[in-house]
Image (cartoon, rainbow, N blue to C red):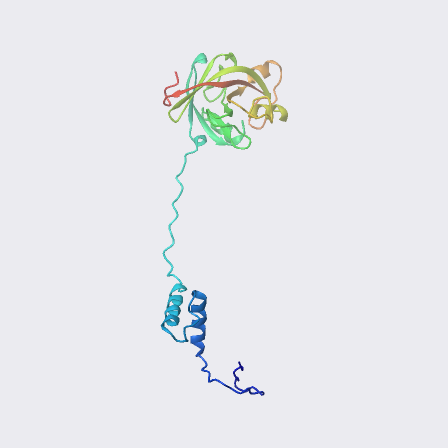
Length: 257
C-alpha cells in the first residue's frame, strides 16, 4: 500500500485510496482506548468509545483535593520514679521515715551535699549514680552522721541480717544487709567500687536489686589521727552498708515498720 504524502514531501507518491487525517486530539484518545482493552482497534477515530475513554482517563488522573493533616496524638507522660522522694526506715537503729531525695549526680558531690545539709538523705542517679528503689542495680543513699540532725549516726552498728525499708509510690521495698565496706575519698578506685552497679565490682553486670547506705567515718578518722578533709568538709573515709532486696509489698510512705 503506498504511503501517504505529508505536506512538503519532495517525492510525492500517487495516492490510490483517499485517506483522512485524524485530528491530533482524536489520535491521542484512540491510542489510549486501544491500550485500554481489546476490540477498540476497529473503531474509527472520534467514536463514542474514544470519547468515553478520554473522559474516564481525564477523571482518573485528576489529583485529589488535599485533606486536613491529622493531628498527632501526644504520647502519655510516664512519671520517672527517680524524681520522687522516698521514705527510708531502719528499725534496728531507730530510724523512721528519713526523706530520701533523688538527684542527677554522684555520691557526696555538691548537689548531694546540699541535700544532706537539709537533714535529708541524698540518692544520686544517672551515669555516675545509682538506680531507683527496687530496680536491678545499686540504690545509693548518703546522709550525715554528725550534722544536720545526724540521721545516720547509728549506721556503723548495723549488722548483717538487719532490715532496711524503702517506701515509694505505694510500694515498700525491703532490703537485707549483707556486708560492710569502707570507701576512701582519696582513691578513685574506691569511689568507683562504691558506685558500681554491683558494689565492690566495677563493670560487673548486676542481676539483683541492691542498696548502699553511706555516711562519714569522721570519729574513726579523727581517732586514727587522720584529719584530712575535702572542699565539702568530708573526711577521707565513709562507712557503707550494702544489702540486697529480699521482699516487696504494698504500702504507703508511712508504712515502713
